[in-house]
Each structure stands twice: as C-alpha cells, then as structure tokens.
Image (cartoon, rainbow, N blue to C red):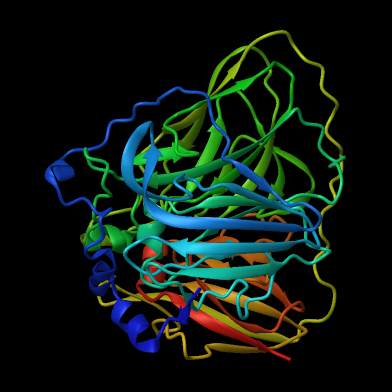
Length: 484
C-alpha cells in the first residue's frame, strides 16, 4: 500500500483550463475510436430503480475494499465508464456514530486518484479525509475514518479528490453514497421505503467511451448529455398511494445545478447535507448545487405515473465566450409509479432533531473571493490558483468565524468546505438560509453569501473550493490550516 502527496509542481501544471486537458491524457476510458462521433443510446429506460449494494457496519466497524477501474454498466449498456467495484455508483457505505470506517482503495485506473468522504466530520489528517494524498495506478492505500460519537445521522457521499483529475473521474462515474445511520431505529420518520437516488451526468460515445470535454465546456462547467439516477436512465420508482417514502437525493454531477420537482406533488424536505431541518418543509421544488444532498419525504396522493423532473437552471454566462449556462430542460430523472390499494401512513412529526448552531461569540471575520481572469479561462480564489504547499487561511482551533464568500463574476459558484460544516447567515439575493449546518452553498453570480463556521472539532489542513469540479481542477481551490 503506497501513497504520496500531490506536489506543488504538479498542482501548478494542472492549474488552468488549457493544462487541465493533460489530465484526460491517454486513458483507456476516453473516447478515441470509431464511436467518438456518435452517442450511447440508453437500453434501460423505464426499468425499476435499483439500489446500490449496501455495505453495513457491524460491531462498530465497517471494513471495505473499493477498486476504482474502468468498465461499468451505465444506462443498460456495457461502457468504459468508471466505477467502484465495477458499479456506478459504487456501493452505499452505511456506518453509525462512533464507528470506524476502514477503506482499502485500489487504483486500477491509468492515472492517480484518491478518496474524499464528502460531508463527513472526520479528521483531515494522515490516512483519514486527507485531500492531499495521491494513490498511484496499480497501488492500494488504507484509509481509516473514525466517526465521532455525536456525528449527525444523514446522507453523505464519497468521490475522488485528486487535483486536476476530479471532474473527469466523477464524470466517468466514480461516486457513491455514504450514510450515517442513527445508533438505533429511526423513530423520527415513519416511512415504508428509504431510497438513495444518486444523480450523475456524463456524455458517452456510441462505443461507451467518455467523450472528451473541450476548454469552453470546462470554463462553463461541463454538463453531460446523459443524466442518470443510480446509473439508470429515467427509472421507475414503485409506490403505493398514501405510503411515505424517504428519498435521499445526491447531486453527484460535475457542474449541473438541479431544480427538482415531482409532478402533481410537493416534496417535503426533512434534511439538507446530512443534517435534519427543524421541521418538515413542503415545497414545490428543491434546489441542489453540485455536491448538495437533500432528504425528502414523498407520499403519493393517488395512482398514476408522476415524473420527477429537473428544470433548467440559469447559472449565469460569459457573454461572447459562449453565452449562458442554463441547463437544457426539463429533464425527466425518474418516474414514480403509484398503484395498488391506498395505505394509511402515520403523520410526519411537527419537529425534527435539528442540530443547534454552534454557540459562542464570533472570533474572526474573513472575506474570500471566487475570481475568474484571462477572459474567463483562469479560475482563482483571492487571485491565486491552488498550491497544496501554501496555507491560504490559518485558523486557531476553537475559533468561530464569519466568512463572506464574494463572487464578482458572471457565473454562480458552489462553495464547499471540507471537514468543518457551516451555517448560512444570509445571501446577497432573496434566497432563504436553511438555518442548519451544511457543506455546499451556491454563491450567486455577482453576489455573496455570509457563513458562520465553527472550527471547533479538528485541527489539520484541508481545502475549500468551487464545486463546479472543472473550476476546482483549474485552480479554484485553497487551503485552510486549523492549528491548536
């Protein structure tokens, strides 16, 4: 088992959109053959939604092996897409507060990779959620995550985080759900089905190879032509009238913002980014930036077919550089099929076990700016591209800080901070904060968000970045060092 940190020189080489293409270099899963001009046709449209394999902890420990390799089935076709253990998404990892999660990651790709447990509140150091590690081709590495005994039960996910290669590897299919279950039975939500819906997008050629992305699409943030749920194309979700289901929706797309609605139904939000809301909130739609998760309760009001739809979202544009970044839409993600005799289900609770924001006075305030230069082809934070050997922010362990994330540019950027969740205090526009800790927030174009961040749990170095992963790979990422 070997690993190595990413070097400063390699980070600089991979920074910038032109050089980011180096990361796509001669890997066997990039489309180069006769099928490169065509597109893969889904063969499983309308099949029943499958759940990824669940690997569950026992006696306080979950020990798993994840092998990252090309060759998975997507949209009912054999492809050269990427997966963990030959599936995309990979297996769902389920742990509990106080558990140990031991993962042996084996790299069968032709390029380096690593593993990020997105949203988990675990140490950023050594062999835990350390984004600076590199697992080279043909090697394995043993990760060990110690889940705190007070960790919120909720929906998280895992994916690669090797700088310069993140977007391509996730676009290829390297994602998986990670659930923290309550220590005992969950008495808070009376549901008959608990489903994971991992939404991804990709573009595959007629031979099943990943279509290479040009510099303009990376500048805007690529959006795949094929949108999948659990690796399937427009699956059906069986349901019974009146029977409540919990859908754990993960936005595992590289850049696509999801504005999701369910035909003829409201979606009842109960959790955001792994944290319960104070009370269920019924809404006509839910919005997820890349990396966000939302748990919703669905209760069919009758029989019939009800599409789950992602509408177009305008993320802004860059004028003469190709127009806006509105997603094509509406896109049918899945269809709920309600049939059979009506079911009488218990009512949802009026209150949920929401986490209280960290108490205490604010000890510091900072401003961080997402910036684009060189005509939209350079992506920086505070005017600098990512350097893994530089400390961009130094924080004292125990501090509670307010950060204002400025976005003077024409594109919306999702802000993600590893390890230390934040509470959104306010936005420059009319968006209402959730009031609970989260780990991704969409910063509007030519706007800002203000966050409260308690650095009270772990010391160590980690990163914050734009979760449009093409932008992260191009350098829109920075380091934070929390010191005792």
